[in-house]
Length: 221
Ligand code: AP5
Ligand code: MG
Image (tube, rainbow, N blue to C red; front, side):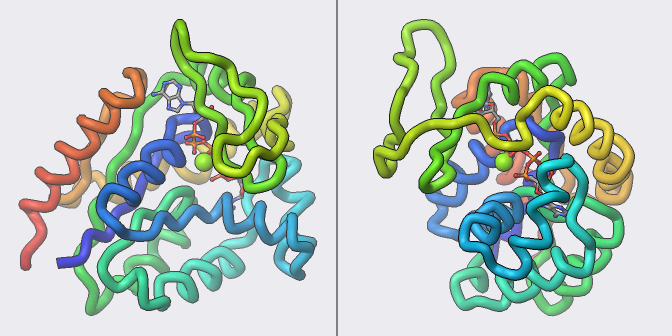
C-alpha cells in the first residue's frame, strides 16, 4: 500500500525538516511546493518569474498554478508508491483538488505539526539556507557547531528572502486565515493526527513515525 502523507503546519513548524528525513527513511519522494517554487525562481522559469514577488511578500501563489504543479508531480512514476507533501495543500480549494487527485489512490494520512507562534518567529529569524541548493543548515542546541557552508554542496549560507521579520508576520497571518482552516477540513478523518513540534527534532520524528503508523492502521488495504 502506498503511503500518501501530508505534512501540515505553520511556517517554521519543521515541515521541511521532518518531511525530508521521513521521506528518505521510506524511500518515497518529498514534494515541497516551496522548494519547487524557489527552484523555479532560481531557474527563471515563467512560473518562477510570476511567483517571485508573491513569495517575497509572504502571500500565496494562485491555487490553479499550485494545483497544476502538484498534479503533474504526483503523476510521475516515483510518486506511485507514496509521497510526502510539504507545503501543499494550503487552502481549502487546494485540499479539494488533492482529494480529487486521490480518487483511485490510497487514502491520505495527514499529520499536523503544532508549534506556538513565538517559537515559529524565533526559528525563522535564525534559519539559514544554502544559496546554491536551498538546503536548510540545521544547527540546534548547545554544543552544535554553527555551520558556515552547506553540508550538501559547500555553498554559502544566507537568510531566506521571506524570513525577514515583516514577511514572517505576514506569512503567519496568512497561515491563520487561509491554511489553518485545513485542520478543520481534515480532522474528522480517521487518518488525521497532530504531533507536538515543540520538542527536539528527533523526538518530533519519533512521534511523527508513531502517529503515521497509527493513522495507517485506519487505512483500508
Ligand atoms: P514554504 O517553503 O512551504 O514555507 P512555509 O510553509 O512558510 O514553511 P517553512 O519552510 O518556512 O517552514 P517549515 O515548516 O518547512 O520549517 P523548517 O523545517 O524549515 O513556502 C514558501 C512560500 O511559497 C509561501 O509563502 C508561498 O508564497 C509559496 N507557496 C508554497 N507552497 C504554496 C502553496 N501550496 N500554495 C500557494 N503558495 C505556496 O524549520 C524551520 C527552522 O526551524 C529551521 O531552521 C529548522 O532547522 C528549525 N527547526 C526545525 N525543527 C525544529 C525543532 N524541532 N526544534 C528547533 N528547531 C527546529
Ligand atoms: Mg519548509
